[in-house]
Length: 85
Image (cartoon, rainbow, N blue to C red; front, side):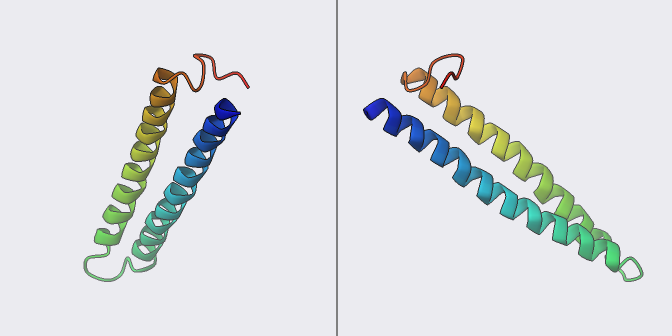
């Protein structure tokens, strides 16, 4: 039973990180949209830059955190090397 509970916690952690990453990525997309809508104004590039930076860092951070979580659970023996169910 402990093994199933730990595996469930892993899936819950991945789901939580996914939801947070999607939320932050959505904010980046909104920044890009604001920059595109205001191309006639001075400084329109700033929301574009920030939106791209947020989106890039969110994707990189999400992939890094997921790989760290999976390697941590592999080291502790909670999941095996091939992620079989």
